[in-house]
Image (cartoon, rainbow, N blue to C red; front, side, top):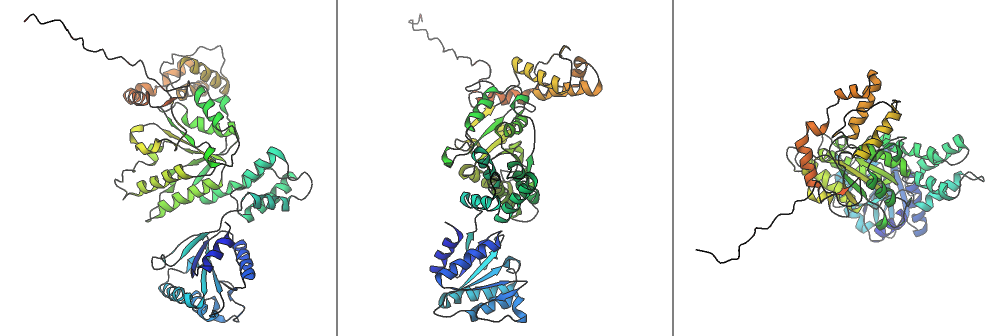
Length: 493
């Protein structure tokens, strides 16, 4: 249901205070004006620059005063005529005690005079005195059909709006943009490329992230070929994401939770996944959402998730999620982390956008059990220290990256992770020494944190999927408890 239809319902039901959350005021005003023409309603509008514009009242010197605009709303109404008074960007003035009182009185009297106050603002910022009086309507971003209409209106020549899969990539890049942003991005693409190009459109779309400062965009060139091991995890995610986008949200892949000791490639896998499947990788730093004022952290969390939905289809990475929500038990932060965590869990369970979520963790004991339950993730994978075969693949990759002679002998890499193999190759190149000598500067995490790694393996055994081979991860051999033998012969006593 579009803005015009929802607004029509509320006006007919005589809701006298409507708050429209919109970043596209001109388009919202155009829809409201069209509705008023169709229904025969009177329309007045106010903003701080132009003052009150009404067909029944001449502009005055005090018309730019927000308090005067609210008081004038009563004089614009008539018993037999519905009148809408649009207050543009009025969120800047609703904290004034005089404005609050005037609005409260006008909203109450508007039931008899059928005068409707409509606040048009980019955010919802209601004082407690007015919370129960207003109904909030969201002016949604353009849908698929409207995006196609915008693209066809800009790219009017043959070949400027490609067909097939390229067209789908272009439309994906435009989704989540406002109408103004979509038109500007299409115009820039035509100037730069001579046609609509998904790469240029994504570049403009990334401005959403830069302006918000809540989510960052990873731009990498490494795909699965530059990542050794994790064969089962690679196959699972590629199969789950083999379809570029599905209309039915119930059939979309949701994401995976990766558990492992440090340095086993969780973060690198996520970054490579985006390149492999052709999706941008968004990185959510939960620490950047924290604010010093009451309610700011929760609001920034909701805003970040809204931006992530707008960037779909994409891959969302939350690294070391157990540290991100470290205060989830509510200790020391007045429950802020718990409320942020609850908001994220609700979104993780209910979001319908095509966002594939990859969360990584090193310590599962700090995660609440509800986080990894079914339907929040498609799978929980454990990434163990690489096997001998996986280590050979990793050595081969980093020998090539750091231009190390393939004939050069390698050191003893017992209990090494992929990160330690990479560090050894980098140090050998940096210090211009053989790999065996560079290995003397590498202390494996399996040595420094052997107890915690063993504890992690024991927990993951029979609880997680294996990232290296299909099936459930099994740590060691499960010993069969021998039953006590009972002597059933009669006692000699």
